Image (cartoon, rainbow, N blue to C red; front, side, top):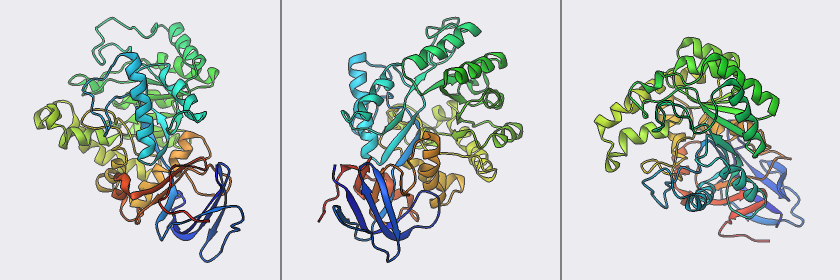
Length: 411
């Protein structure tokens, strides 16, 4: 590992403040010092990278990652499940692609193989595979009526209170950081599915108590307003979608805004509405799947969450053929165009607030944090779409090591 000094850069520090000219010194895997304006840092022993006026910002955090969803910008796969050997290799490929596109951390929203992500996380952390820092998950996939599971059949676990508690303990034992539960179904699974509740108040409460005892986080797919409220009351940390949140659900979310995060995943609905005809999803099918109405609802719900100070993070549900992994940064533009975020607010959600979700020293540029950094051509604090093209990522650093080194580097 070579210690590095970035000079002649504009710095966006991940807090949402305006970018500023300065320098950053990286020693080992962490940021050692940050200088502003004309101040200069000690260059002794540092390889100097001249940014030529580019923007240096924290690596982004994918807040709703599905690395096991197979399709990517490099390889579209028209199937969700593959033979396990191939699926694991595709998952590793998707981890590398995620990092290639500037996401140095990823918070999983579920895996199609319950042991895939803990193994992948450990391989990445050991430096054997390229990929983002990963909060690994299991996927609760046995809910009746969801994703083709026949009525009365639950292959994942016993739905009794005892069985739910045992499932939580088992997922902790195999190394998961978080577990995703389907608190409600979805329009994409069946018409009217978004209002179908999958867990009772008693079941949700038992899941929450078991997770606290085991020391594992909880995440959930929650569309219906009551599903959102049950998840919040049970202590879920990451709540995905929240499309049908009513005023009472928003009140509950706001009351717990310091302990939870929302990742609505607008990219999937946008893709179904505008980019999926080649995959058999035209306007009529998009409407049937709730994509058109869901996107419209988000345009009122998400700005209200923002107004209330609820942490709403970009990212989610990338990995479908029409919404492939590698396109994740598009969510920042959707936050700006559809939800009224300023570019800096969207960037802060994808960096500083994403670091809070990860509960790791990432997401901001300040001394002592991991040196997970992007050198970006242009000014993403004015135009977040720059981040959608990996050509604009002039350098990608994770933990003080270049995943993508800058073209020019001098001592």
